[in-house]
Length: 282
Image 1 (cartoon, rainbow, N blue to C red):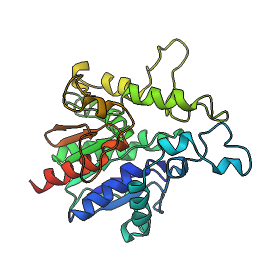
Image 2: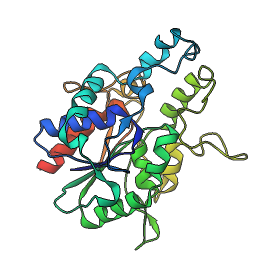
Image 3: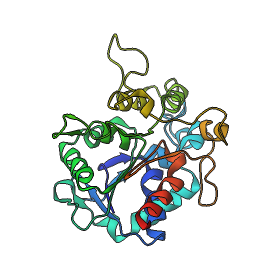
Image 4: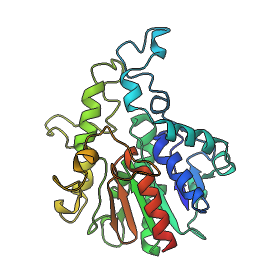
């Protein structure tokens, strides 16, 4: 299992929980970072500090209110602490040295902070790796902005995204907009913290959201999948307040399209990684 991540600002839940579930299921994980050194997760998503209106005030800045709701939960923080001490995390490959030889799957996690994620999403090295993974028929799993990395990957053989003709989900505009609106007036120095890419003048609201951009890469808008209103646990799945766990997959939403698996956000990660493990074992 190969997991490429950016040098900084990745989502700790999507990486660490996936690592924990997969290794607990007996899978071997190899990490790859851009510079070949251990990466660092988005600190705000670990601590919750930096999202409140008083965050820049000395001493007060350590108190988190909004951040406590939006940061990684305890399961994910504990998983991140364990992952950070693991040999595979401490000794990653460089992106340019990563190979799919002896690898059975490629996992693309996400994150949203622009300073770290843009180089990951737009990396030509990773685009080539994604094309090769699909060409080889390996299992490719993507969650949140990791789906955007796949959507931006163009297969030279077709001139289209590798996701063209596939069913997928990703971070929904409803989730992205909700978090953005909640923090854009409390985080004065970086009001677009929750938007990796923002709209240009003249573009409609949400045009550069993950959901909109991924949808534009698909064969049909109907290929972007979201929870169907009225389906089992749909309120729990779409509230943005409930996250799945080892024992409770009800809040999660994962789309299975053959050798391609996708999920929306950190709250899907336990189920996402477990389904990936099941697919590889199956």
